[in-house]
Image 1: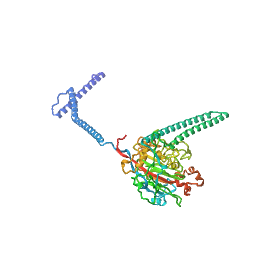
Image 2 (image 1 turned 135 degrees about the horizontal axis):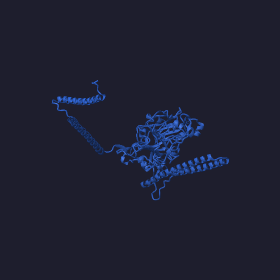
Image 3 (image 1 turned 90 degrees about the vertical axis):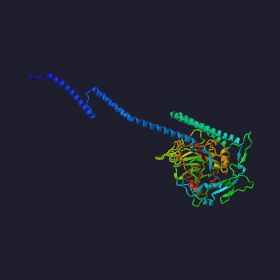
Image 4 (image 1 turned 30 degrees about the vertical axis):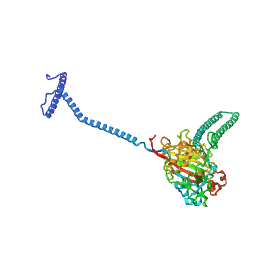
Length: 605
């Protein structure tokens, strides 16, 4: 009983014992740790001191930091030095490149004036081409057999003709000052023509809106009397609409007719014009003056030593098998740009004909594209230029006011699934040969409006021919095309370029300048910043051929030749009958002229 302890006393003793034990244990551990450290350092352990311990720990941390800095600072300095050195070297290289570029100059590009690379005149024309011999391609499927040069000579379908230029076949030539005035007048005509087209489109748009409003109003009318009045009013509006459209078309026709029948009478302030051949043979041109007569050359008697012009005749002949013997010339040289000019006095025309002067790379078609410069079909009478390509080449970004022509249309295209014709009105502005909303291989097709109805085929021949030009200039971002007929309307610069193309002395040659020719009828934007990359058209060569029927002329036979269709149910049957009309199916070429821009140093624009 005497040994019993109160519970409260026991708790106090245990609590005091626990705290004292913890402090003692902590001191002992600290002294032991310090002793170990001191023994490791080889010295006697000092008395335990908490503040000193903290100072030593801080000193150690500071030492470590100094040690780290002593070792990292040189590394940082080295890195900084290397980066600075690299930046300095790069700056020196950039400066050297700049100074070197300035010293060497800009890169060479084909941006200079045009230089003649091929003057295909007279007998020399054949030296620039191969005669293809064989059937037409499966895609064209023409009803002709192309023959080689020897067979063509034997058949008489290639000839060289030198003709005396009579006064009636000459053109009026003016002094330089008046030429400038006349060409300024022609440019003003182009501007006036564009204004007429704009007014015509606005008038047609207003008429279309009125018709839609009239139809909407008539749908709200009720009653027989109202219906009767509606019908009467509709007929009256239709008559008025037709009358307005006829007036607009008639005015346009009158104005363009004046272009054709423009008198060449000079003003009283200028002397009367002289009469000269358009493109006479030059005395210094051995091609046209000293050609040895052979089995394909015909020389007209020229007792008065009058000026002459030499022409290449390409035609066709019938065969017992049916398909006509014909000509296809394929150029030697490949082009990626250029200015291509053909001076024609006559082109094949008539039912069943399908002549063409064009650029192509048949082995890589349509990857490398196709450009049709001159292409006639049956009785078509308006010049067209067509581009054919792979995907991603559209002509919906043509600058306004850059051309006097329009676009071919694509209406009635059968739906691939249902076969139902799509009557949506569309312009043929997609050059992709398989565009689903255009006819197969239609391409993008520019059509002439200013000379509409007389710039191709029979009407062109009636005017004595004309001059076609196509400028393929990817550096300047376009393909442009012109037609001039009759020859008195050819710009002086273009005429002088053709007349001097065969001069031996280069100083006497005149460089063509397309900026002096007025507005083209076709303008196709290509290259950077357009909807048609320039590489859609490349590595192409010139082709001159005369085909019959086939996938184009033959497919249009029943529409274009209704008179012949009554007797001959197919185009092939008509051509096989060897009608007299096919005597007009021949090329009469004064010359083909190919230019390329000179390479010059110029900074990219």
